Image (tube, rainbow over all chains, first blue to last red; front, side, top):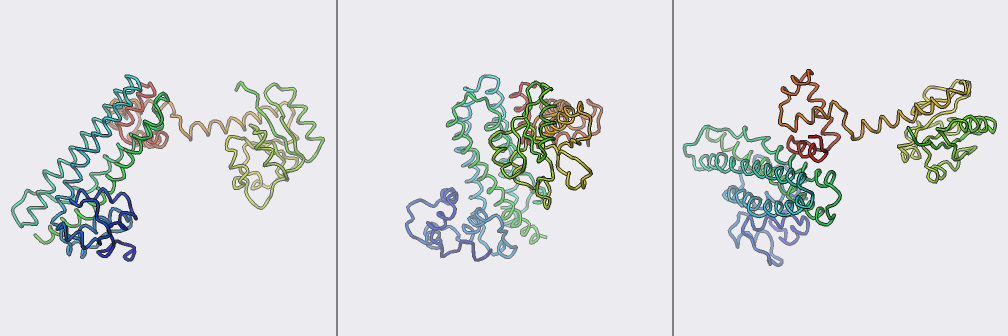
Length: 230
Length: 192
C-alpha cells in the first residue's frame, strides 16, 4: 500500500492524472489551476497548505484501502481540517445540489405533474437531510474539535456518537439514481436524464469520499484529542 | 397460458421422436419446432429456434458436469429443460432439469408434465426477480405512508420480524433503500 500512495515528490499534475476527481480538492484547499510541473511539496509551500494533510486527504480520497495509522494522524498538521470540510460543505450546498435540483426540476416538469411533484419533494427532503447533517457537524462536531485542539472548555459530547451518521444520506441519493434510470416514464429525453444521472453519480461518489475522509481522518483525530484531554 | 409453447426435441431414437411429436401435435398447447438426434449442434439450434421448452434425452449430454454448469443452458434462462427418461437414471444426472418425462407415462400426462415444467420456471422468474408479492405491496404502501415497522406489524397482524424481511425483499427487488425513495416508487407505480 505505502509505495502506491502519493507523496511530497509527486507532481501535482501526475496526482490528478492518476485520479481526475482530485481536481475537486484544489478549490477546497485554495490551490489554483495552472500549476505546471510543480511538485506537491512546492505548490503546497507556495500557498501555505500543510502538504502532509493535503496528501492524506488525496490518498484517502483515492485509495479505498488506505487507512492512516494513529501515528500518522497525530503527526499530521490538522490546521486545515475544519476549513477543508467547510469548503466541501459549501461546494455541495451552494453549487452542486442547486445545480442538480435545477436539472431535476426540468425533468420533473416533463415527467407529468404526479411524477414531477414526487421527484421534486423527494429531492427537497434529501437536500433538507443533508443540510441538517452538515449543520450538525458545523454546530456541534467542529466547535467541539476546535475546543479540544485549543484545550478549552467544551460541551459534553463524544465523537463516537458521530460514527455511522452518513449511511442514510448516501442511500437516498443512490435511490434517486435508481428511480431516474429504472422507473422514470419513457417520454423523457435520454440525454437529459443521462446527464442528470452522471451528475448525481459524481456527487454520490464525492460524498462517499467526503464521508471516508471524516471517518478515516476526522474521527480518529478527534478520538486522539479526547484521549489527550483525559 | 394462452400462447403455444415451442419445443425443441433432442432424442436419438426415431421411434420415440416420432411418438412424442405425434402426441404433442394432438394438443393445441405445444408445437415441436425442431428435432435433433444428437446434441452436437444443440447450441446453434437453440440460438436459432429459441424454444420455450427443451425436451432432451439426458444421455446425450456430457455426464461429467452438472446440467446447471453447462454454458449453453445458462444462456437460456427462460427455457424449461425436460428430460426424456427410458429407465432408471442416477438422480444426480437429473439434477437441474425442470421436469422429467418418463416414456412409460400414460400419453395424456405429457402435456401436464411439460406445462408444469414451464410454469415452474415462470413462477420463479416473477417472484425472484422483481415483481412484488401482494403482501410486499401492502407493506410497501404502508412504508410509503411513513408508518413504522411496529405500526405495520400491528396493522397486518404479523410480527415486526416478518415486516423486516418483507422490507429486505422489497429493497432487493426494487433496488431502493430509503422510505422516501420507496414512497416515490409507490407513486410512480400508481400504488397510492
